[in-house]
Length: 107
View (cartoon, rainbow, N blue to C red):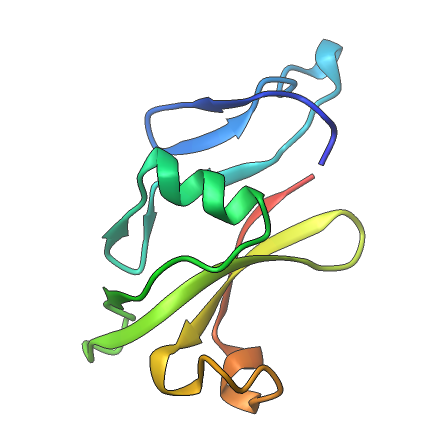
């Protein structure tokens, strides 16, 4: 990320350097991911690169999913929150793990 402070907005937590004259940083983590409202503690955990505790999430298919969240870095200074299904939490190479990512911010 660009080194700016993380500030809380109406719909997400974003970078304080969002203005063009301050760097035009587009980093944001949305407050709601798959029906789960994230708390400031959740955001701190994600930014630290740690995995959250398990939550019940609601994907668009209507089925409930128990899983954990982790922020990962993609290419070109992009990031995503990775959804790790609970039954696969110890299997980081699972193809299901790799598919269930929600890109939620860019830097």
